[in-house]
Length: 267
Image 1 (cartoon, rainbow, N blue to C red):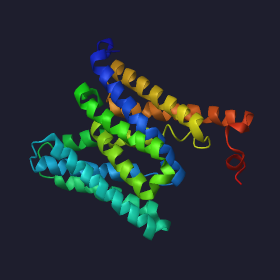
Image 2: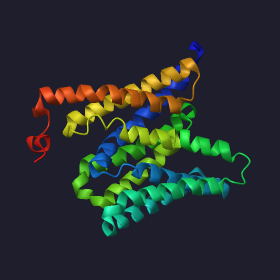
Image 3: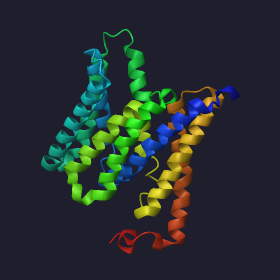
């Protein structure tokens, strides 16, 4: 084991990045599960990645220009999905899958003649969470604070479908550049899965606990065994989700009052 890898100056910012991602992705992920649009995050993340790659290829020197390209791409995807949800609600999940495939292959096509394309594509998918710096996290923290203010302040019912997609696009655009597409998906879906039957603050807190523990263990294990950090965190999140699911089910069986009666009974 590599104990030298346990460097707080590296693991500290990486953990903070993970906590920031979880702060928005856990509540948004619970909403994604309730809506049954599981792959929306992968689709929008891929489209945002296409925007980043396109901006890089056009040699935009300003970080703001790159962010604008990424956000613009994600927002366009969100607007498109808002329209398709109204026009073709029965096949919305299939259309989200098609958009994901187009985004993924679009990235490959844009990088086809780039000698470093393979490495850039890997970074987009797996991320480079160990290389984040505190300066970049300030921008993300401000952005996520605004997202959470709208989500919990205005309320998910009042922002509607279009507001949800746009809010989702903004959050995912920032997170995919921090932790990569795969970890974005894992952060959204895995912590929310064991608690999908528990509504309200209790379910949110349990989901956050699963996510935080997954990031902590993933960072430690990747440092100790010198393994790719993003991939290890995805696996630790998945294992903790498997462990948490029966514990949560047992809690519901013992205390059905944890869920509102109408939801628990299915009526």
